[in-house]
Length: 409
Image 1 (cartoon, rainbow, N blue to C red):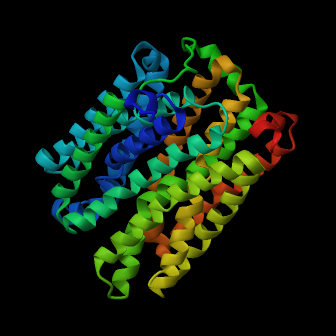
Image 2: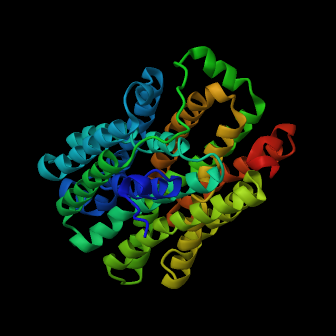
Image 3: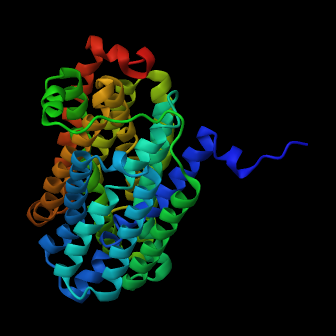
């Protein structure tokens, strides 16, 4: 009888990708750890709308800066990827734990959140790089698994908030930080780069200008920016929308927390299913369909505010399922459209621009709530997917689309 050793098990692509996805899931809980406890922090620290927004915006800013600095310095090429991932995960875990232990107001919390975002720039993009060294075929499904793990990890603080007790914000942050540290340890012990590893060229500014001259890449990036216009604002403010809507019906706050977790977490399923379908039906087909549905949800969910909680929950789940389903396919499209030597730079540029854009919509929702109420505040998010659909339809008609998903547009 043949014995399968740990070494042979971890020398095959899909076991490695699965374990890597699990690690990403555990670490990414640090991203929304503070956002999940905003109601408790508002009560304790007297936060205004701007301060509440900055608890999430600071992570976005830190991530965008960290991703760009990492690309310029070539950190993923200078250091072993598994060590960079693990060290970054532990740094994010430490910053999250410190908020729970020592932060006594929004200023230190925001500083620690910026540092958390910078640390997380060494997790998800580096995880993508490790994944790319293990698979060439079915890349849409593989990246979909990682983004699905990111999605479920982003939702996890809302579940931790319910388990730890609504209002006990320190416990939620300590749990999220501890779980992130475990994710880093898994990668440090079990994950290495695969046989498809290649050295990336050093960063040069001329690479950026070369990428910006490529119309198919510009269209794919415009589609991604339309997607990002909607995504993180929805993830940030949907839990508070649900809390306010349920409270208007006299429903306990922990139910809003559970629905928020489900609505964000279900996107993990959407990513995996969309990844498999995109490899089969085409990248532009799946991204256009996802953005069409998610933009419709952004337009109508506000109309259910304070109404039937089952209807609100149903639309929230559909929105969560489709709003992230297309995300991995924009990155995959860039990996297929960019010149081989510039894929890393193209992905770093895409990620940095996308997360910088999210600062606008995350900041924009609270003033809109004050102006027009929850009934219409989310409607502005539909603008992004509409522009994104136009970009992907245009890309679909381009000869370059033949490079997507083996010719499946």
